[in-house]
Length: 116
Length: 113
Image (tube, each protein chain N blue to C red):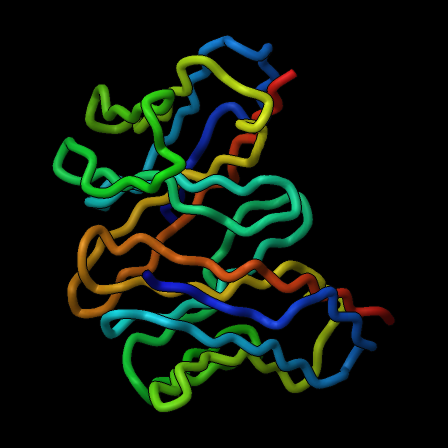
Protein backbone atom coordinates (compact mmCIF):
# COMPACT_ATOMS: atom_id res chain seq x y z
CA UNK A 1 0.00 0.00 0.00
CA UNK A 2 1.38 3.43 -0.90
CA UNK A 3 2.46 5.55 2.02
CA UNK A 4 3.92 8.90 2.90
CA UNK A 5 7.46 8.63 4.21
CA UNK A 6 9.29 11.18 6.31
CA UNK A 7 12.92 11.53 7.28
CA UNK A 8 14.46 11.80 9.75
CA UNK A 9 12.22 10.34 12.43
CA UNK A 10 13.90 12.46 15.07
CA UNK A 11 16.01 15.59 14.70
CA UNK A 12 17.77 17.45 17.48
CA UNK A 13 19.09 20.89 16.65
CA UNK A 14 20.50 23.88 18.43
CA UNK A 15 18.48 27.06 18.65
CA UNK A 16 19.23 29.32 15.70
CA UNK A 17 20.20 26.50 13.36
CA UNK A 18 18.45 25.71 10.10
CA UNK A 19 16.66 22.39 9.71
CA UNK A 20 15.16 20.67 6.71
CA UNK A 21 12.49 18.06 7.18
CA UNK A 22 11.92 15.72 4.27
CA UNK A 23 8.88 13.94 2.95
CA UNK A 24 8.05 11.71 0.02
CA UNK A 25 4.29 12.00 -0.64
CA UNK A 26 2.21 9.36 -2.38
CA UNK A 27 3.10 9.55 -6.03
CA UNK A 28 -0.25 10.31 -7.68
CA UNK A 29 -1.35 12.83 -5.07
CA UNK A 30 -1.70 16.48 -5.96
CA UNK A 31 -1.87 18.32 -2.63
CA UNK A 32 0.88 18.25 -0.07
CA UNK A 33 0.72 19.53 3.48
CA UNK A 34 2.73 20.15 6.59
CA UNK A 35 1.13 20.00 10.02
CA UNK A 36 2.68 20.20 13.44
CA UNK A 37 1.73 18.87 16.83
CA UNK A 38 3.30 20.42 19.90
CA UNK A 39 3.49 17.82 22.65
CA UNK A 40 0.09 17.25 24.21
CA UNK A 41 -1.68 19.70 21.91
CA UNK A 42 -3.78 19.42 18.82
CA UNK A 43 -2.54 18.96 15.30
CA UNK A 44 -2.22 22.33 13.55
CA UNK A 45 -2.14 23.11 9.86
CA UNK A 46 0.97 24.91 8.64
CA UNK A 47 0.89 25.00 4.86
CA UNK A 48 -0.50 23.39 1.73
CA UNK A 49 1.25 23.09 -1.61
CA UNK A 50 -0.32 22.52 -5.00
CA UNK A 51 0.93 22.86 -8.53
CA UNK A 52 4.41 23.81 -7.32
CA UNK A 53 3.36 26.68 -5.15
CA UNK A 54 1.92 27.41 -1.74
CA UNK A 55 -1.87 27.39 -1.91
CA UNK A 56 -2.63 28.24 1.70
CA UNK A 57 -0.71 28.88 4.88
CA UNK A 58 -1.60 29.49 8.50
CA UNK A 59 -0.46 32.31 10.72
CA UNK A 60 2.10 29.93 12.21
CA UNK A 61 3.86 29.68 8.86
CA UNK A 62 5.87 32.88 9.06
CA UNK A 63 9.01 33.97 7.21
CA UNK A 64 11.10 31.46 9.13
CA UNK A 65 9.39 28.64 7.26
CA UNK A 66 9.59 27.64 3.63
CA UNK A 67 8.56 24.64 1.56
CA UNK A 68 9.89 23.22 -1.63
CA UNK A 69 9.36 20.34 -4.01
CA UNK A 70 12.83 20.23 -5.47
CA UNK A 71 12.69 17.17 -7.69
CA UNK A 72 9.11 16.04 -8.28
CA UNK A 73 9.14 13.46 -5.51
CA UNK A 74 10.47 15.05 -2.33
CA UNK A 75 8.61 17.72 -0.39
CA UNK A 76 10.62 19.64 2.19
CA UNK A 77 9.95 21.97 5.08
CA UNK A 78 12.77 24.31 6.02
CA UNK A 79 12.95 26.26 9.25
CA UNK A 80 15.60 28.93 8.84
CA UNK A 81 16.50 29.77 12.41
CA UNK A 82 14.92 27.42 14.87
CA UNK A 83 13.45 28.57 18.16
CA UNK A 84 12.72 26.54 21.27
CA UNK A 85 9.00 26.80 20.53
CA UNK A 86 9.49 25.06 17.19
CA UNK A 87 9.96 21.81 19.09
CA UNK A 88 7.11 19.61 17.91
CA UNK A 89 6.16 16.61 15.83
CA UNK A 90 5.93 17.64 12.20
CA UNK A 91 3.65 15.63 9.94
CA UNK A 92 3.70 15.61 6.19
CA UNK A 93 0.50 14.61 4.40
CA UNK A 94 -0.71 14.25 0.86
CA UNK A 95 -4.12 14.07 -0.74
CA UNK A 96 -5.74 13.38 -4.08
CA UNK A 97 -8.20 16.17 -3.30
CA UNK A 98 -10.97 14.87 -5.49
CA UNK A 99 -13.96 17.14 -5.46
CA UNK A 100 -16.28 14.15 -5.19
CA UNK A 101 -15.45 14.17 -1.51
CA UNK A 102 -12.47 11.86 -1.27
CA UNK A 103 -10.37 14.53 0.33
CA UNK A 104 -8.79 12.29 2.92
CA UNK A 105 -5.19 13.06 3.67
CA UNK A 106 -2.58 10.36 4.22
CA UNK A 107 -0.03 11.17 6.88
CA UNK A 108 3.57 10.21 7.35
CA UNK A 109 4.92 8.90 10.63
CA UNK A 110 6.20 12.33 11.57
CA UNK A 111 9.52 13.92 12.40
CA UNK A 112 10.05 14.81 16.02
CA UNK A 113 12.01 18.06 16.10
CA UNK A 114 13.72 18.97 19.36
CA UNK A 115 15.32 22.39 19.60
CA UNK A 116 17.80 22.76 22.43
CA UNK B 1 -13.35 30.11 10.64
CA UNK B 2 -13.81 26.36 10.85
CA UNK B 3 -13.45 24.62 14.20
CA UNK B 4 -13.88 21.20 15.78
CA UNK B 5 -14.77 20.56 19.39
CA UNK B 6 -14.21 17.17 20.97
CA UNK B 7 -15.10 15.89 24.38
CA UNK B 8 -12.28 16.29 26.83
CA UNK B 9 -10.29 13.28 27.85
CA UNK B 10 -8.73 11.21 29.01
CA UNK B 11 -11.29 8.43 28.81
CA UNK B 12 -10.65 5.15 30.60
CA UNK B 13 -12.83 2.14 29.86
CA UNK B 14 -12.82 -1.52 30.68
CA UNK B 15 -12.47 -4.01 27.85
CA UNK B 16 -15.78 -4.69 26.06
CA UNK B 17 -17.33 -1.42 27.26
CA UNK B 18 -19.24 0.88 24.92
CA UNK B 19 -17.38 3.92 23.63
CA UNK B 20 -18.71 7.30 22.60
CA UNK B 21 -16.46 10.26 21.82
CA UNK B 22 -18.44 13.37 21.04
CA UNK B 23 -17.45 15.70 18.24
CA UNK B 24 -19.18 18.83 16.98
CA UNK B 25 -18.05 21.21 14.33
CA UNK B 26 -18.47 24.68 12.94
CA UNK B 27 -17.86 25.22 9.25
CA UNK B 28 -18.71 27.92 6.76
CA UNK B 29 -19.25 25.43 3.95
CA UNK B 30 -20.25 21.79 3.65
CA UNK B 31 -17.27 19.88 5.01
CA UNK B 32 -16.12 16.30 4.85
CA UNK B 33 -15.67 14.79 8.30
CA UNK B 34 -13.01 12.40 9.55
CA UNK B 35 -11.80 10.51 12.54
CA UNK B 36 -8.05 9.97 12.76
CA UNK B 37 -6.32 7.74 15.30
CA UNK B 38 -2.83 8.07 16.72
CA UNK B 39 -1.47 4.97 18.44
CA UNK B 40 1.35 5.47 20.95
CA UNK B 41 4.56 6.49 19.21
CA UNK B 42 2.99 6.50 15.76
CA UNK B 43 1.63 8.98 13.24
CA UNK B 44 -1.95 9.76 12.29
CA UNK B 45 -4.05 7.13 10.57
CA UNK B 46 -7.42 7.68 9.00
CA UNK B 47 -10.00 5.66 10.91
CA UNK B 48 -13.17 6.59 9.02
CA UNK B 49 -14.79 9.36 7.06
CA UNK B 50 -18.13 10.71 5.86
CA UNK B 51 -18.61 13.17 3.05
CA UNK B 52 -22.28 14.10 3.18
CA UNK B 53 -25.17 14.37 5.59
CA UNK B 54 -26.46 11.09 7.03
CA UNK B 55 -23.47 9.16 5.72
CA UNK B 56 -22.11 6.63 8.19
CA UNK B 57 -18.41 5.99 8.20
CA UNK B 58 -17.24 2.71 9.67
CA UNK B 59 -14.02 0.79 10.17
CA UNK B 60 -12.65 -1.76 12.66
CA UNK B 61 -15.94 -1.75 14.57
CA UNK B 62 -15.97 2.04 14.93
CA UNK B 63 -18.82 4.09 13.46
CA UNK B 64 -19.72 7.74 13.11
CA UNK B 65 -22.70 9.37 11.40
CA UNK B 66 -22.59 12.78 9.75
CA UNK B 67 -25.41 14.77 11.38
CA UNK B 68 -25.80 18.07 9.60
CA UNK B 69 -28.74 19.20 11.72
CA UNK B 70 -26.73 18.92 14.94
CA UNK B 71 -23.33 19.55 13.31
CA UNK B 72 -21.99 16.44 14.96
CA UNK B 73 -19.90 13.38 14.10
CA UNK B 74 -19.73 11.29 17.26
CA UNK B 75 -17.48 8.24 17.28
CA UNK B 76 -18.89 4.99 18.70
CA UNK B 77 -17.78 1.43 19.22
CA UNK B 78 -19.85 -1.25 20.82
CA UNK B 79 -17.07 -3.19 22.51
CA UNK B 80 -13.60 -1.71 22.93
CA UNK B 81 -10.40 -3.71 23.15
CA UNK B 82 -7.09 -2.96 24.84
CA UNK B 83 -5.61 -2.47 21.37
CA UNK B 84 -7.97 0.48 20.81
CA UNK B 85 -6.00 2.53 23.33
CA UNK B 86 -4.91 5.60 21.39
CA UNK B 87 -5.65 9.27 20.84
CA UNK B 88 -8.64 9.94 18.59
CA UNK B 89 -8.91 13.14 16.56
CA UNK B 90 -12.04 14.44 14.92
CA UNK B 91 -11.34 16.59 11.87
CA UNK B 92 -13.03 18.38 9.04
CA UNK B 93 -11.99 19.41 5.60
CA UNK B 94 -13.82 22.08 3.70
CA UNK B 95 -14.33 21.60 -0.01
CA UNK B 96 -12.77 24.88 -1.01
CA UNK B 97 -9.22 26.04 -1.01
CA UNK B 98 -6.65 23.35 -0.45
CA UNK B 99 -8.76 20.90 1.57
CA UNK B 100 -6.62 21.22 4.65
CA UNK B 101 -7.79 19.57 7.82
CA UNK B 102 -8.96 21.32 10.95
CA UNK B 103 -8.50 19.05 13.95
CA UNK B 104 -10.07 18.83 17.35
CA UNK B 105 -7.83 18.63 20.41
CA UNK B 106 -7.91 14.86 20.53
CA UNK B 107 -9.31 12.45 23.09
CA UNK B 108 -7.01 9.96 24.74
CA UNK B 109 -8.63 6.57 25.25
CA UNK B 110 -7.18 3.98 27.59
CA UNK B 111 -8.77 0.54 27.67
CA UNK B 112 -7.92 -1.65 30.64
CA UNK B 113 -8.29 -5.45 30.72
